[in-house]
Length: 486
Image 1: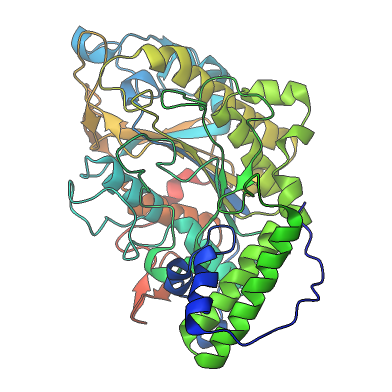
Image 2: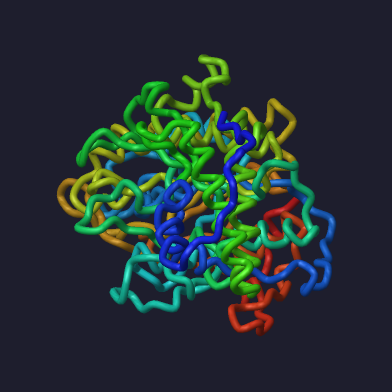
């Protein structure tokens, strides 16, 4: 663990150029433009947030980015034409009316502990746009094809709203831990393009960077490597906090000097301009440092302290171990954890070309991780107080090519929900004969967001100030799906 030691350095007056150069060096790569971009509302300017009795203390949100096929997972159509029904057969499960893939046998065996929503739907047939929608409950302000990266104008994620409420005393959280964590990487981290993508949806957007998630970081071996479904060594599973990983040449002594440098820089800048931006900068830098050096954070991220047998059950791949890490985080006191199963160089749920990876890697890794999570939470007495949500940002086309590759299809896709008062062993909503459109009880992303907020005791009609200070609803037009709860 990093340790901050006392410095005997003498303060001195610096020139403006020296101050800017010092800021450019940054603390753990945090540069001056990023620091000044941080915006947060003063805590005493917002009235206390009223909460109702929560059904869940925390949420684990599993994002299967790329879009799993409904026809290969939780909405099989064995009587559909051959070009539609898919290569897999349904398997016996404990839920009446649920046709679940034979490749998800572990989940089938515990289907009485979760609900499948078969009628998720929206009209944004694009990864970035849909990824923003599914994590925020709001359509993205950028039209399809108009961009791929997060912007400061994005809507805040559900997790960021939770962090916002926590910082205003509406939600209790353990000291030294954030309310919101994203793992194992930010969405887009492992994709290989001319420039790295930073997909929208998981950030605080206009709410202010002070409510961004604490994000872990795991590297991959090379361009074609997919650690999400291959076995990983313990050395690879060394979860670091994004932006706080020390370069090999940076010693603790030099790190302490950087901290001293930053403290002096702060003093000099504050003397020159006392503005809200600088005050926000001070709060953000203190919070980042506090979380980085917190024993609670470091302990929660130590996946190697889990029993080997349990780690095997989750799967030794990056997704399985990250799902186990999510359980550790909520057990430690984190309120909202997002686990991304990211797209990697085409070897992902975005299976346009073939279903080989779906059968060999993706479905087995999902089956092990999700079934182990639900069982593990249940055995620890945590399932009733932890809402588990698992879905992609879209589904796949009903018609497939000769090797069962499928295109984007956002008008119908499934979601698995469990715990937090959710009724197990039921199916909500229905689809047509080709798994193309919902035929009853459609659920849009804003409905899902309202349901998550309701489970956490947050009024889905809560208003928060946008970037201009104008009050806006955290959910606009959605409603909690109360039929899911017992």
